[in-house]
Image 1 (cartoon, rainbow, N blue to C red):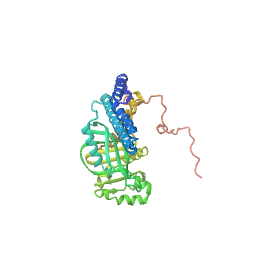
Image 2: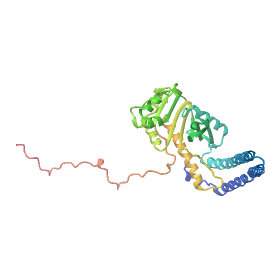
Image 3: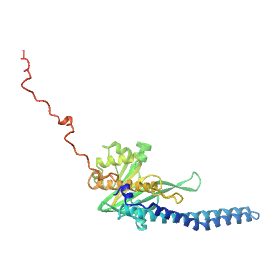
Length: 356
């Protein structure tokens, strides 16, 4: 995949993209006018009703303000998504003609794959900013995925939605058929130690998987818990190099890997929104560079996982330039200590003294 500098050298028309942003901003202002009218009218009507019924007045104001906020949010979201689609399709077509941004069908497939991955149970899943293409000739889909879970608020009957995963999640379609396997951040054992390990083994939500323990790799075990229907498969797949790679990635953020049917699924929990495009902020090189970095890091992560599964080795880093040729040794370079030849004895060396 091209580096960001290579992408820029192809010519990113920032003026044209900035004009599109300003058009989207004006469109949002125009279409959000009804929201402002609804809000103002509801406040005026509420103040008039206040002299008749304070309760009715408050209800009218609250309902009117809520309707105005929701209407404005919808208009703003549509304007932002339309702008993002224009920018990202232009951006990714230069990066690779194979990449497509915003395919709704692929978004539905991505959510189904996130559910089947078994990364987190009992969650609701949403996705946006879906990108499809290929990795080493294999179909690839990724997107900004958010998983949330309902949490009761104390002793009351109300509940709030808590985010338990947010970040890039994607899958690669292969020609293989993998046993249901989930490699997850070991948050329970990390927090509770031996008790957490027992709780994992007693997890009734994973009765169709077996908890696989890599006792020969305590560093990997400290960060990950592995569930699989086929112990032989995962022990052969999770080679020492694969485990070392995941352990290094886990030190930066929570990473997930899964296998199911023909898919290899992976995710990184960053707890932030990817490809965030503020309408009020001028489009800059910094914003596009962040878009590229977020995509390239996850693409490289997926590429490495695919390569580790297929060959046992990591792939070539995305950021590494392939134009640089390593320097060749010259005749003036002194030999290394291992190349030096020890001195040979000569005829001038006196013989050793005779043994008494």
